[in-house]
Length: 202
Image 1 (cartoon, rainbow, N blue to C red):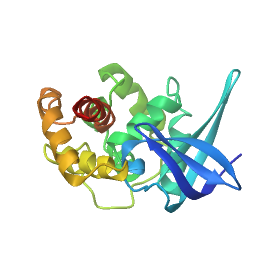
Image 2 (image 1 turned 60 degrees about the horizontal axis):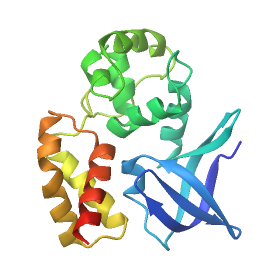
Image 3 (image 1 turned 30 degrees about the vertical axis):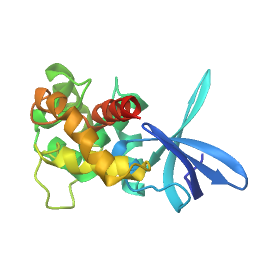
């Protein structure tokens, strides 16, 4: 198992990064909140989890060990694969997930794309004794607030090398899409839409 990768960031994309390790570029799938802290050319240490399939080897990256461990614990629940587990961590912090499960906060899980009401109810039962007790003081639901997604998106775009002005324009361009998504827009989807708008503008 590859527990982490460490080295300069060779490139960034909407869904991942390439880390140079010993002259080799290691591709790591990351959520927008993890990508937003990375900068091309700067050294980074990314906690990782290797997912092995018959036809692929995929390395998922996280901001810290807590996220990585939570990612792996989430997959012990039936019906939760690596992509859904990563989506859950893109919407909620590990402690917010622990608090949501501990308080049976169904709405917090439904805020994750791909999880419906019945799925949330099932996950609350299965994860109750697996995630552990919350350790922080954040509110149960950590879905991005109406304005929180703007900061996340702008930070991610600047991390990908865009100028603040360009990032502002892209955020403005996807605001209607975010408002249509309600109170918890998915930053990953907005990031892709923002990149498309920037590519058209260039």
